[in-house]
Length: 416
Ligand code: BES
Ligand code: ZN
Image 1 (tube, helix red, strand yellow):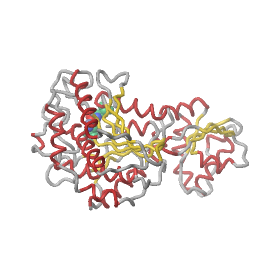
Image 2: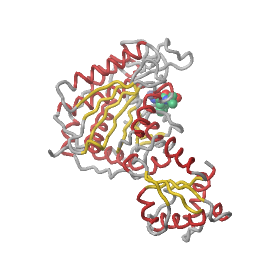
Image 3: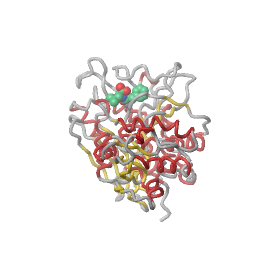
Image 4: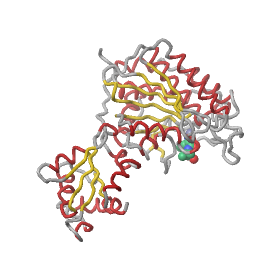
């Protein structure tokens, strides 16, 4: 990845100088081929008449990519185009070999996913979203958190309880979607997910079925320290709260008779605590099938909030800038909020990172936490219980409203 690093680091310099010169590394041998990964749009605009050879790739996040072969000495044309016509820096990645470029697209498209303007996110579906908001019931969210955190000692993916929790979620969602011909539910196993399959509910879009919106949370729990499959890990906040919030979003939307324009998928991921395993397999599957996922929202830890902390925070890393901006818009339009607080994990801390790594636009929202700006002090312990959140799910209610807003605005309502 040496070439990639050099292109990225030269970006600020190139943008600082209006004439965007050919970067230093291209000068040693101007005829040497360089393999560029860029958006198809950028490529087409600059390649017209230049004779570069490009290969179009699948379209993650709605934006087709192209790999093209450039003489190193002409890379400056591409840089100048991006800088002068598209008025931005970067936006492409260059490699020494085609294999490296292909591996980048295959294995790690997170850099593109984080910056891509994959979709045109608008906030104009108040007619659908507004009536939903008052339907959210704290008692429903509380009941789901209670069931998930108190029915078994753990939901560890490598335990029989982990399997039972997956079946419980499948059945709960099945019950909500009974008699719906546009909704199907499946359990998706993954190689390293132990006994626990993910649960995926697919609500077929009525107009744009090939465009997919994802709302997700993880079903498993873990105890740190002696954290094996036998250790007590109620995981009421982490992340029964996310599954419970998601389930209430699903209930409200189904009860309203909503018909989404786009296909909507609700996901309860397996084995997040073992390394984002369920979501990684699912996101990679979507990428390998060339599915067009236009937006992903992750709900992980929605119910712990100390006095004086914000009702919710936006995770600022491993996620897509355009989608973050949409979440800010939803927060102000539908929750009457001001500036949305942020939290930076500093690493791929939850399943949104799996989608980002697969090249799709994803975002995550997160609890207010403690007065010091942190999160639940009970995470990954036997004390992550509903009792330690005041036996209430009130803090998850704004997350359910935000989830409904995300569903209505990214999924939009079918006019048919
Ligand atoms: N819910 C946490 C993620 C989290 C923790 C987000 C604290 C924000 C603040 C998640 O379930 C988790 O524990 N993730 C792991 C990483 C994963 C790759 C195993 C973690 O943070 O250690
Ligand atoms: Zn979690």
